[in-house]
Image (cartoon, rainbow, N blue to C red; front, top):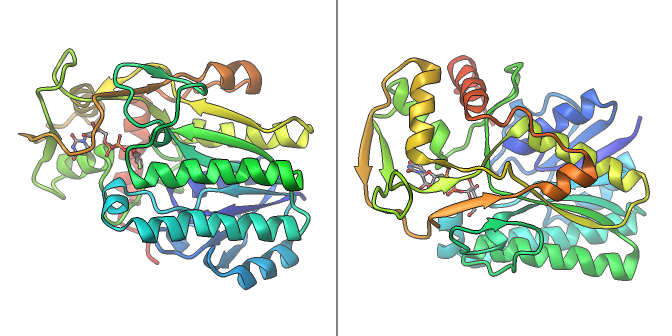
Length: 329
Ligand code: UFG
């Protein structure tokens, strides 16, 4: 069986990637320091505990498993933290990715699927983002991800590393079979915070700003179901296996939901009241971020069929009710 090294495989997106890789016949080997991930989320292949900053450990894992490709999810990703402590973000994200690329090349592994973000674009309010939108990150998190994209490109020129880079933004939902789901500590994302408010784990959801220049005054985002997202990663892997050239793909649905629309849909799906407080704007929030995915649909054959708000909330809610508190380190 073909082995894929999955950095961050104990995290939200990485664990779902391991599940689809395993069902597609690959052996996903998780490499994770459990800084923000969960040992219980590693269920679909071997686990190697390790940090990207530990080059010797990386070399050891490459030598043990001889992966044919890397899927690189591991990163620090809280935008607010990245502005307070950029050094930690640059060290972990950029330094860690440099170690990973060097270890991969040293081991003869020259295929990488990289998890990048629309945060590399910065503020383009009202514009539907695509692969050609200029990248002007407005926070350190986005800056580190853009730097890693550049680094991967340079390793391509110098060492023949071929890459598929995915840029995405708001990932939501959970494995429809309920084995894994979203669990962050601390939680900052809209849908899990709302589900906590719905079932009384927190008193209310605060809407960050109701005076934006949008139809209902709240921010608009493009939400992609985590299963659709990771299926794109498997298609990206096959793209590289077919010998195709390095490529960047945006993964969005092209349509946005306002915070109020997400709240209304969550109330409908759960059949419960959503306790809401109307609060101030959150610093750093763009008004509208919607990403197209024409290239991914045309070239990869990607079909984000689960990415309806109803399906994302229903899958997240099922996970939240049955398993959400059960992950442990
Ligand atoms: N929101 C609220 N109340 C909350 C939480 C969020 O109103 O309690 C709003 C936000 O203001 C925003 C929308 O809900 O308009 C979505 O917010 P999230 O925090 O869920 O997601 P973001 O769009 O802010 O963040 C996304 C990803 C991050 C990534 C970041 C990069 O979810 O992982 O973009 O800029 F780091």
